[in-house]
Length: 169
Image 1 (tube, rainbow, N blue to C red):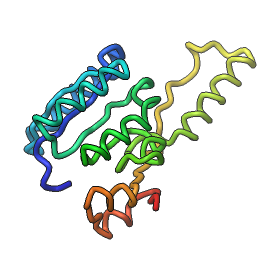
Image 2: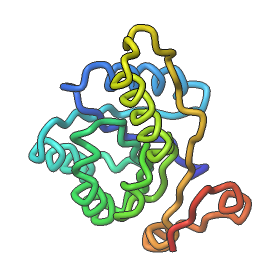
Image 3: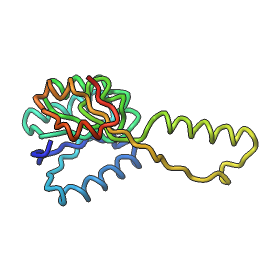
Image 4: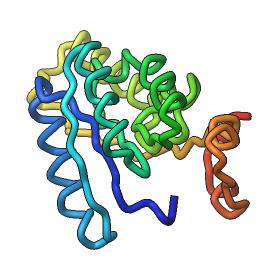
């Protein structure tokens, strides 16, 4: 969405650390990218619906859904609403794209689960959690849903498709 200027950002204010981190990053990046940001808060199904109701007055060019367990659990609701409002949406998890979101860029869920298993195994073998090293994800995935792009009338350039880790047809 190279022509996007007005971007809505949906966060769950009850997940304080994730919401604050997301908003801090978005507010730092927005001026350099020439973006106007609209912050939307939702921590319930009704609040998601209410956030989308604001789009009838202020139709954003795109939506970014911040990382959050509750918002991730509402992937189908979000995909349905973004399709209805014809808003391209970006997420942090592949699963959101699999159910109809446009794209995601985030950590590889399988790698994260593997690291949790390694940590758990070490603790069960007697290691003290405080003695274990902090590990950060090193693999990030870029996933695009071409069916959603077509529905939204977005032509995804071949050079973007070529760098995607997965293209959902």
